[in-house]
Image 1 (tube, rainbow, N blue to C red):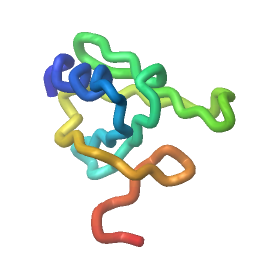
Image 2 (cartoon, one colour):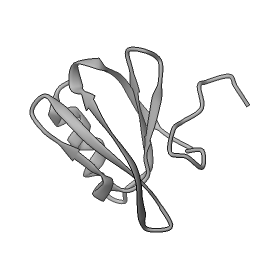
Image 3 (cartoon, rainbow, N blue to C red):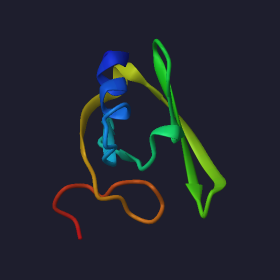
Image 4 (cartoon, rainbow, N blue to C red):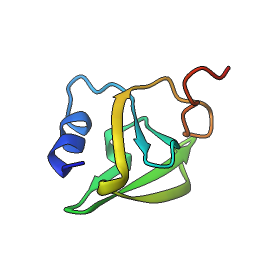
Length: 84
């Protein structure tokens, strides 16, 4: 995916949480625009809970296959479609 495509979702106003699905099928929720940093070939997503750093993931943009509106789970990783 092109970095501008990810940035469009990150810069939406008002901001709406969204997910990024990668080529393995795993989804990652972006709950706040300040937790996503987009570079030319990858993005860095920080997971926080109660305003404290919890974890992070680096995603190669080439592996991001889908972006959409999200309803995140408590750990910041989205549920796969069709699962409770």
